[in-house]
Amino acid sequence: MARFVGSLILFCCVAWAQRIDPSNVEKLQVAWRYAHGENGPDTGAARRTSFSATPVLADGKLILVTPKGSAIALDAKSGREVWKVPRNGETRRNWGAAHAKGRVFYGTPDGKLICLLAKNGEKLWEIDLRAGLYAGHLSQNMPPAIFGDLVITGGEVPEATPQGPEGMIRAWRQSDGSPVWEFHTVPRDGEPGAETWAPGSRKNRTGVNVWGQCAVDEVAGALYCPTGSPSYDFYGADRKGAGLYANSVVALDGKTGKLRWHRQLVHHDLWDYDLPAKPVLFEVKQNGKTIPALAQITKMSLVWILDRRTGEPIFGFEERAVPQSTMPGEESWPTQPFPLKPAPLSRTALASGDLNTLTPEWEQECRALYEQVGRSGLFTPWEKDRYTLIFPGLLGGGTWSGGSFDAARRLLFVNSNDIGYIGKLTERDGRWMLSTPPGQARFTTKNLVPCTVPPWNTLNAIDVDTGEVRWRVPLGELPEAKKKGFDHTGAYGLGGSLALPSGVLLIGGSADSTFRAFDAASGKTLWEQPMKASVYATPMSFVTKEGREFVVVAAGGGSFFAGPMGDELVAFTLPETTKRELPSRGR
Image (cartoon, rainbow, N blue to C red; front, top):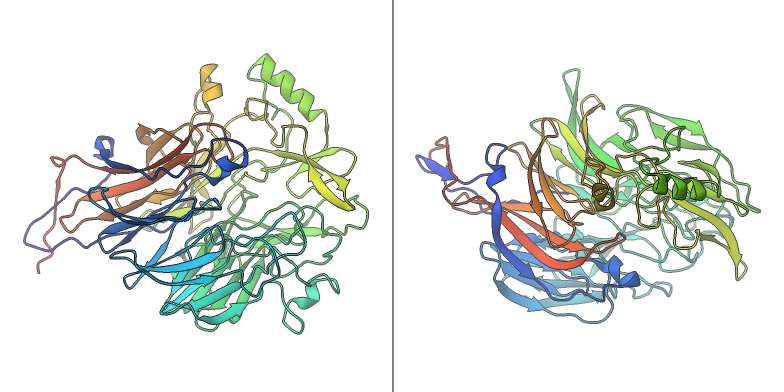
């Protein structure tokens, strides 16, 4: 995720600053806490609506959005509530708002796009993103992208039914919300890519949506958008073909929405391997040349580093033969693309010796579960008679949190879950639907201890100039394992990292209610802060005009994992006595 920076330091003959670096990060302390008080019930599906927002800095205020779609402005230095625009009704995950020219733009669970004045919360306009589309759910959960004077939206659409609202990418004028352009991620008749779908399969097809975020390159005038899988996710007999522009990085002209290039990373998706993460933009340096690049993080734990000008993989790729479907009517794609570098960040198959044998109880439970499995692997299609085990699974590999980049150290940071998923196809109401063992969708014990050897979540540093993993460390401590005396296991989770220029890397992203700081160069843990709930959000930071640096993060817990839910936004800073002298820059 991008790093948010506040007001610039005032220049003078000698500047004093409270900036966070590896030498003082252990002194971080809580500056303030804010609880929004809008959590839903701590049960069932409601847990998936946990508070995961990253606030955005706007005119000295932090703007956040709750799962109910309420927008709240806080004084950035004190955490005092300045204004609130409440919203009640449907509740869904929401990752925050965008800001431009004194205006705040955000989406709601019921499919509205809203523009407010940042200074007081006054509503300037509201539009219905569902208007004119095929019936069905659509919500805007991620902050929209800002390109010039345009607001760019995607949206979350249905996954369990083939027909529903189109998952297209659209641009709206910031001034009044009027439409400017739209890009059809499922091509319409006569549009390029339509030939990659079987006749009749594109009509009212839902999915193929950008439920994450598009990355913006204003200099190149381009948007880079990650698309999701077509619906239904797990059985595609009614949508035969590769299915552009599903599971693709799509580069668009920001002003017109015209296609520049695309790179499909999964053909004919049968595993819900949507691309959930915003691409990370940086430059690769090779042989004296500088290449504008992006990294696309995937659920498969594959990281694609592409040339932003062409979409070509900088370190090469190959199409590899993959297992084929045995389902009636299904035609799985014979090959899938793999980058040659970086190597996968999590296991992509269950190898000999991978089963969890840390305790006799866990081994017994895991072996019993594994005995129900027929085939396993990354691109192994589901079957109807026996369970298939896929790695790294639907919450495995990289998730919506994406990555962060340290330009000084040339490192891309990605946290990656290593947890399998079990399913088989069963016929219900004339359709093939994915089902899982009772109460056991993930390849874990009933207490959610993964059935593979640890680590179960890792933090990885990738050298973007070579494609090699520079270092890898377990991320988090699984509480159930720690009770048994097993340390450094990694604890599966969600949430992204923040790379400070000083060489400090901050991240939650694990199911142990802890916020951590790492040394960016080595992966050494520098600081740990217990939280009231797990941090399933991406941190942000800002610097005041006095030069004091704050780090702010949401501790929402809940989500898809066990543990308490929370509603707190917490700000950290150094004690006022912790200062370092900055070189004079003059006036």
